[in-house]
Image 1 (cartoon, helix red, strand yellow):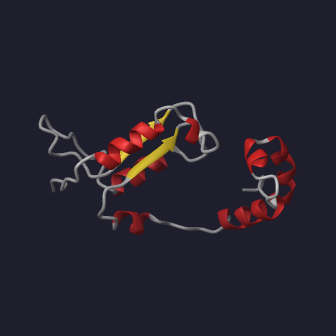
Image 2 (image 1 turned 90 degrees about the horizontal axis):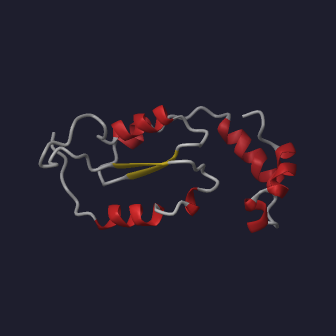
Length: 129
């Protein structure tokens, strides 16, 4: 991510994040983030090994491709088949794609808390193989 690095820190002064954390060393943070994003990593084996229920919350206006999120959802058993009339084919994983938000403002999405609470309150079920 060439746009990351110490020069990008100048633009942070106009951001809500800068207002929340004015003492942060934005140049150092963005430099470290840039270094991290240049490294090749693949979490797919680790994600596929998760056995507990997972909820993926995704902002549809973010930099991560929706197809990539769907790949992770599929690794968790989601999106592979219809749940059936009785719902017994539902995966343990949940996917919420929130419209019109990014990772910068996703926490201000009006229904996010309700979605997360519904997931947390849902009874655990075993997926059908």
